[in-house]
Amino acid sequence: MGHKTDPRSLRLGITREWDRVWYASGEEYADYFLEDQKLENFIKKELGKAGISRVLIRRRSGQITIDVLTARPGMIIGKGGQDAEAFKVRLQKLTEKNIQLNINEEPNVSTCAVLLAENVAGQLERRIAFRRAMKQVITKALKSGAQGIKVCVSGRLGGAEIARTEWYREGRVPLHTFRADIDYGFA
Image (cartoon, rainbow, N blue to C red):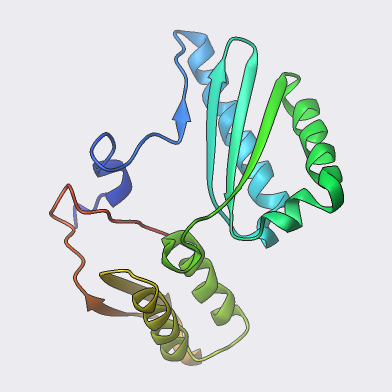
């Protein structure tokens, strides 16, 4: 068996910060953890079309601050912020706590691994050739400033009866260097 680790969690505190910032002890910990999972799943399910790359949750006494990084913030905000306010009310009903919702635009859409992975998965669902989808994402990322990229797809590729895994790598992807800014996405 391989000993593979998520490259983001391996770099916590070095080049990356936590997505959840709060402290709890005892039973509160489990409640907060489950509430965070419920919030993130709800946000990704409801706003999936907006290209959500990251959901940051910070807790202070009685208040939850949620930062949503998205490729298309206009889809969430709506005209004059109406949709964002309605969504905030739905989140408050879900948790029964005071919530502050911040919607931010993802600064590097074409180098964000989560968005690129969703892009490839969407193309595979639309039956586009997998090699073309992978190479398209690789060129897009390298043109927008990434030093390297590795893309892996697996399953019954091209309608074959036997599942297999294919991957391409361009540039440098230093997985053993902790200071390297490595992003990871799975879809």
